Image 1 (tube, rainbow, N blue to C red):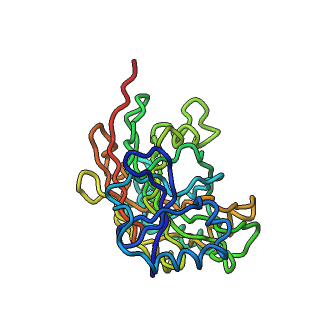
Image 2 (tube, rainbow, N blue to C red):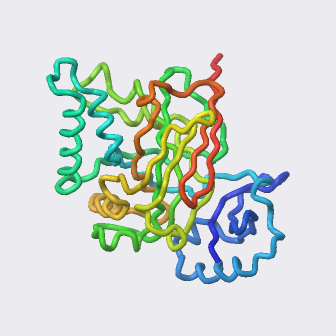
Image 3 (cartoon, rainbow, N blue to C red):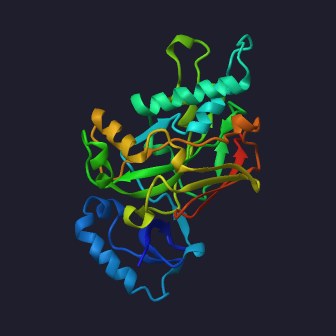
Length: 313
């Protein structure tokens, strides 16, 4: 029987617990999710047996406070990894004196992406684990900007240490998958005072709560092909992002492999795989006070994030 893992609090109980989610009900576990991830061969059969005995007596999912399902030591983030998204960016940022038509610009960008996929390497940067928030937590929009944006992403959760693994070996090191919305403050991405330095991902992506994560962690065996999942993000009910992971330039296996060439990936770590086309910058509509984002990825449940402006003294 299929199941997923969650972290939650029961009504009236402050302690965070791990749970097995089966058919919309949560069954409390005596183990932490980190322990399960770190010793899956031992605990996996026990969880399968427990799921098979699920009798409907667990805590209703809707009645619990759902927390982020993982507490990683490292968050590795891939940028510019969806083909259509990058082509849109190239077209949107072409110089005013570029003599090419938009169609030609897109054609050239597509050819560039094809070459990158065959000969290039992924673009990575790091996020802070302390930025992770729950799948239903309120997102406070920092008052220092009005340019906060969404980026829905599939995240691979490492199951056993991966260091210099090949793409063929990489998925053997993935425990499962969860959903992350990688919030970005667009006007802080590039340093205006030091343009030669380039991107400033620390300031642009690491405000409190900027990585809503979850609601669930689905073991890889139940998720299926990571290159055949659909991501959808709605803003106030309107679809803004809707794309298949098949549009990735580098697959999940390639991303895990490339990241592991530099640093060991540890059990519980997150590898974010990039965001598809349809960010707020594309639509010319960034996050505002009162906005509600509803995000889904095949098999990973629904994430609801309500936004409010920061109120400072």
